Structures are given as C-alpha cells and as structure tokens.
Amino acid sequence: MNKLFFILLLLALAAYGQIQERIAIINTLDDRDSIGFSELTYLTDMLREAAVNVLPRDRFGVMTTESIIAFLGSMENTVKACKESSCLAELGKKVSADYVAQGRIGRFGGGNLTLKVELYNVKTGNLMGSFTGNFKDIYSSLALINEKAPDLFKKMLAEPEAQKPEQSIEIATTTAPQPAPSADPVTTASIIANIQVLIQKGLNKNKEIIQKASFPLSPSNKTALYEKNRKTVAGSVGHAVLNVLPGFGVGSFSQRDLKFGLILLGSDVLNLNYFLYRINDSEDLEDLSSSLSIAISIAIVSRIVGVVVPFIYPSKYNKTLKEALSINENISYSIDPLIIPKPGPPAVGLAFNLRY
Image (cartoon, rainbow, N blue to C red):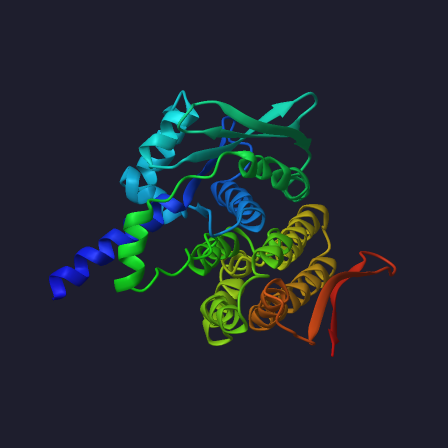
C-alpha cells in the first residue's frame, strides 16, 4: 500500500511540474567589476521579485538561487557557468528551465553604469525581449528594474500555455494530496545572508541598501540580525587600551570608528609636531617647560577621550544598526573637534553632545 501511494505521489509531482513552467533568473554579471558581489546578488533578487509579482504562480515557478546551484553543483560553478556561457538559452537548458533571464552591468560614456536584461525562451532559443538603461549608482539601478522588469516578464504571458497530462492528474488527485505552491524565491535566508554581507562591508555606507533589503523581514528576523551584529560595551576594553597605548586612534580604527580614529590620530600627530617644533625653536628652558606642559595636557585630554569614545561607540553603532533594520532607537550623540583661539598657540579640544 505504501509503495502504491509513493508511486501515485510521484505521478502527482510529475504532473504538477509539467503544469508549472519554470524561469531561471541567472546571477547578474559585471564584466568590469564595477560593483560588489553582494550588490549583484541583490539586483538578481530584485529581478526575481519582479517576476514573482507579475507571473501567476499556478502557471509559472521562479527558480531560487539554491535550486539553480543544485543543477550546476556549487556557487563557484554557477558563477563560472554564467561567465563562460556564450548562449543564455543553453545555460537555461542546464538548469532545466523553460525560460531564462539575466542582467549584465557595463559602462557607457563618462563613467555611467549600464544594465541590460535579456529574456529567452529556452525551448526555441529565441530572444523574447530585453531592456537597457543607464544609472549612476546602485540605488538608481533599483528604480530601473522596478520600472522596466515587470513589462519584460509580462511577455511570458503571451506564450502558449503548457498542456497538462489529463490521466496523470486524474490518478494523482484522486489518491494523493495536491502539492503546495512553490515558495517565494526571494527567501528569508538569502535576504538575511545579503544583509549580513552588507553589514560586514560597512554599516554606514550600506545603511540605505540594508533598509530596503530588510523591508520584507519579520520583526523577529530583524531582531536576530541586530543581536548577532550589535556591539557591546564589554568588547570595547581592548580598543580603549589601544587608544592609550600606543595612542594615535589605533583603538578606534580597530573598532572601525573611522571618525574618531582620524580625530585622535590628528590630535596626537599635531601635538607631537608642536612639541618637536618648540624643542627645536626654543632656547629658553622656561619656555621649553611651558611647551612641554601644554603638550602633556593635550596628550592627557586625548587619552581621556580615547578611553571614553570606545565605550560610547557601541551605543552609536547599535543605533545606526537599528535604524538600518527599521528598529526604533531614540538616543544619539556626537563629538566634534573644537578650536579655541587665544594669544599664542590655539587651544584644541573636543565638544561632546548627547541627545535624548
């Protein structure tokens, strides 16, 4: 009895596979390496999302990255096959797709980037349609996809609908449950993986991209991403020590706090140059002693700031992380360089602002 049920279930799956035509959105390529791998992956996901929104799920299934990799063996083989394939339709046959589409990034004119997306019928090898546009940055490329990709995929609706085998459907539906519709190709796991890469490459510079990418995630997924990437005060001890010894903002740089790394570096370099200049220029012991006192005072202030800043930075970083993931946060701070003019050498300090 179990064997008979298994056979009937296979018949049902085979019949469902023949009803639903599959489209493979192959990884977007950049022949000139103008943008990073994570951005290319995100553009590919946006094309898949456009196809899902336009195509009826009872007739078309959009293949996920994982299912394409399953046919080609690995992500490395997938990227290699995409780059080496001279015919996109032939690549579609390798992944058992009925339709195949792919985007390519290039350059035009004075440095503007171009995006060309082509759609092929794998069975006939014919080009069904394409669109081309130019853009200045990754954000404007998303607008280009949102504008033109839906019309491209709508061309598939004019193709003759695949015929379903009546006998197989009849046997399957009377004995086995109907398979569930295919899952959304832009899976939660792939979105989370893309966001994780963007955070590691630089939270501040990728903040807007992360905000857009995290939009489909549930609050629990966003919270999990936040907990994984947030910085703690306890982890700042080593950075504070490095800001004291050797100084020069080493601890802040290692914490990836570029702003204060540069401020502390500039403060220590200017202070050292000032002291060395005064040593070479001063012949009066009392004047030299005064210069030494000024240099030591500035160095002490710099070290105090260097100790405090690493413990404040996690709060600011976590706030930015919450904003990128659309999690509310109300506390912010800023520290800015301050120059106070006075007779003789100007006094240099830092202004600390805390906002609730």
